[in-house]
Length: 115
Image (cartoon, rainbow, N blue to C red; front, side, top):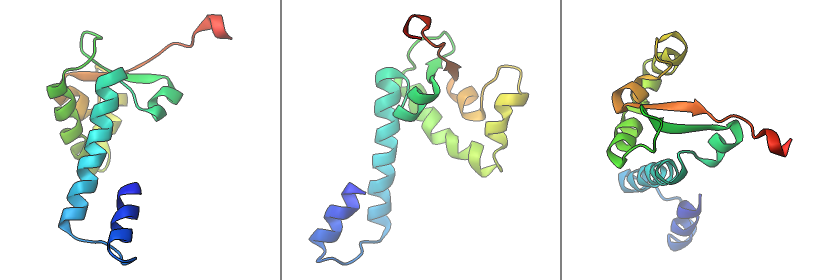
């Protein structure tokens, strides 16, 4: 929203459209996920759900793995969500994009000392 807000101001209040705008927004979206996944393995929303992305050994995924995961996620979605549902029917509890990137989403147990 911030990006478009400034572009509209620079464009004398007129809407800004086009392929370039879409590419910038797509890069911002990719940057958001890559930044948070690489820093702490989770976005703010994932923190609320107490889940995080790890590699198959439980460690922080590499940048290459995160890029593969990010690029493969739309495949899980455009297949009518089957790639996401695979988490529940597959033997390793991984989505398609997790399998392709050798990552997984794990649940973080609630800290008993703070309850």
